[in-house]
Image (cartoon, rainbow, N blue to C red):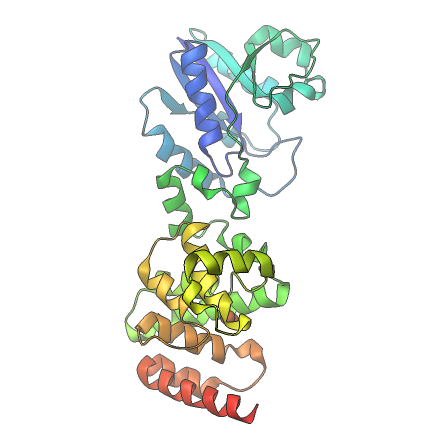
Length: 338
Ligand SMILES: [Fe+2]
Ligand SMILES: [Fe+2]
């Protein structure tokens, strides 16, 4: 059989990788495409998400096409993985197969840095799928093919951009297992506001647990509640105009609730009316939905705010409605005092 290998850290796997695999099937006429996740990439240095998590996401993609497989040779090997060692192992294990090793344009440029580059091109067919239309020159025997661009990278996804380039199942997996989600928030807030968001998320979880509600939903409401807090004003204005122009008369400080709800849905693709509603109302406390009450209270009672809120926190744990009424009352007095 002719096998194309698509290697990468797949942290996470996205439409760009899938496009490469499909392209290999179509243009190279290979019988199968094997996704080969790396344990650690010699030329990259960011810390990789756990092997089992990356593998689980690849599995979700592999399930959708009988010609897709996953090859864990590099994951199983401890320490650095060089393509040379991997190919050697593949050739020994599967002498009946012919291998096509797919690389991107960025890898083509650096190919002379690859371990035993001269040997490599004799061991398998190296194929460069050029994504940006400007093919690098190479002295090596590498076949180059152009491929329609999929403008996304895993690093963009890890900070919560371009999530629409993830297969639906992978996105669901990411949220279910809380992969990257803290980075989504950290990338958009100051450190202090980020710590506050984590603290509110924890408190929301506790309130949910003790009041018999879904902790996972509560966590995401807490985590994302202030996501729009530092959005530049002109951008905020655009969101307000398109999402809720009727709310423009509210003070600007209140807007981040309305816009945050919309951003959570449109950018982070969390399409849950409960979450939308709770974030929407978190600044003013204008909803008596249990989740909205939880985040309103958690936001006001966050221990990081530096006053002793432990008594009210206990009340909210016992009975969120009662706690909510007390927090609303306290907030009203606080505002009156100015
Ligand atoms: Fe807020
Ligand atoms: Fe907040």
